[in-house]
Image (cartoon, rainbow, N blue to C red):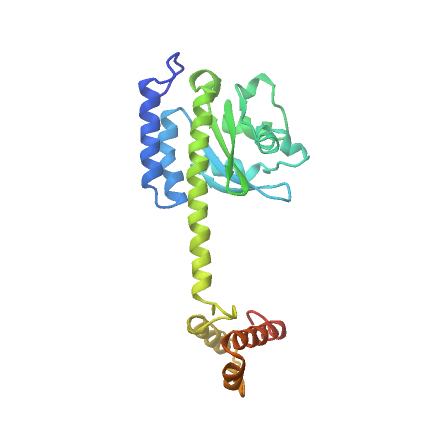
Length: 261
């Protein structure tokens, strides 16, 4: 376990950040990263953690818990960062202010609130709420221990915040990669000129439509549309004008039918 030391570059710290750097480089997904964090944080005396994302409606969307106890705790505690009583704890304040929030000992009465019975039931004594800036959204990593003072005396806050910055960078990278994959997947199913679904999209969805028609005992109709005298447009006015005509027709089709139906 890492303990407080006057040496900011202690062997324990170097070992933790070496293992963390290796995990950040090797993890293939956000889930791999979070699962890999569990044994690392246990070495720091962290007995449970959860990750969530702040939403515009004032709630915090729960995304991952380190174990069943942590999942059960989060299931009983509304996660908020607005002006509700549930948002006045460390997690809500961390999101509101963008700064880490620490509780040295939940039993000293310094952070009372509607969550107190659940804190007592699960035996948490100290906690750290670390806001993470991931792309254009704020995520929250909350760490818990059943040892009082764990995040002040035995874990320097500077080390925790250094860890939080590294984690936010890794999550931002993963989010950017995932967004690019989604973009490429959408592009693969669309005609680049008109934005209409292409043949690949038809092949992908026709089976779904046939299965739905069979399940509902209904017929499936497939319509074919052809543009008469389109070639003379290209020949007379050029392909650039022809592309404009196709785009205009596509926009009218989009306005006339549902995207999925």
